Image (cartoon, rainbow, N blue to C red; front, top):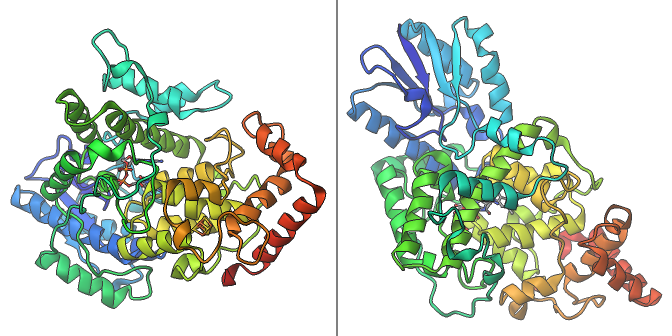
Length: 510
Ligand code: FAD
Ligand code: SF4
């Protein structure tokens, strides 16, 4: 029997389930740079370079290992070509009896591939993606019957299941499950943040950069200063770099932001983990070993492992349990368009400018910038979830529907009615001031709320609280905010709402 094995751009590992039991003599692998997939959203140019270059390197690695690989390079004349038509042509060419692939990370494509058996006329075997700690079914079983899903409880299950950071007696190492309370220090320049891991582009990457500059010129961002790893070997070096230079401080400064530093002590590993260049379980193991070896404190190691073993798995479970309806949720009834400055960074709000500018240059911003700056602003301004989700999917090198959507629609926009998080992460400028040095360089004054030069986050925060009274005033975690709002004098409340109304009517000028 001759199998055609389809490997997608985020499945770049020889451990992918589609390759299990495959035969180098009879089977053929197909990979393709398809226009549709590269352009259905305004993907950042660096994301396209990362994926096309990593795919080309992976195809070469497979060939060197003796596999027959049909690799379809991007060609501007093939714009009408779909993934299905590439697979259909490869089946004809090879005379394949069946197609084997690993389940993809996006509902849209999943729906299409699920129909292929009928349209292609050969069996299509879709195998589970074994790169995750929990199967989709395992998550669904855990979630069943629970009124609310909370990451912390799922995370503890995963700790027990994997034994990561667990004592032989089955207790969490260090005595606590979660050290989040120790991970909220502001960064004032010391210790110095390490330079990010860099790989200079090789000939393959340079060729892809030219291709992207020529054919995707209108896409967001820039290819300039591309320095991501594009092979598993280099991604492993990036992991080692993180372990040596950033992990020890990752915990303390996990929530910090800086006017000067784009990367701080973050790992910058999500682009690699999500496309297959790094295995999430090897990443967690390496972090755990750093703790056992005394190279990093428990608040850093636990905090880091929680992001991968907890949050990453949790959001994936939520995505697959709730699609396709989840993508359409808009429980707060938002109607506003995404302000144009999300694409240009052209705003006087220093924190927003810095986060968007870093995103444009790097296809990266760290978690707190995504959550508490660009996300928080979209929440307070009442941007339509669909528009802000599209933005996040486009602009980050690590963005795939299964991970982006729950983070944006659920965690940031609270558009799922609190299914993913118990309360919205809405915050005024005070939070940004506490965690960064942006405010001291800003046109606006963070300690003002109603004046012309007042920080927009302040009045928008109260506008949000006021307009969603019916949604949140009975939420026990929001009671204090509503009591504070009620305590303010009527004229004070009126001035705040007036300032916010002005800002909302003039978003593109602020
Ligand atoms: P680190 O801070 O070093 O964290 C370590 C790892 O933990 C990351 O590499 C990532 O694999 C994982 N992780 C951390 N937080 C999350 C989370 N909330 N969900 C899933 N995995 C997590 N992550 C993506 O991979 N793709 C996305 O499209 C994406 N969109 C996001 C959108 C919003 C609005 C928010 C608030 C978060 C989003 N995240 C997304 C999660 C997180 O911000 C990124 O994973 C992280 O910033 C990647 O940088 P890093 O590798 O330096 O992470
Ligand atoms: Fe952001 Fe407001 Fe601080 Fe300016 S003053 S940086 S807008 S939080």
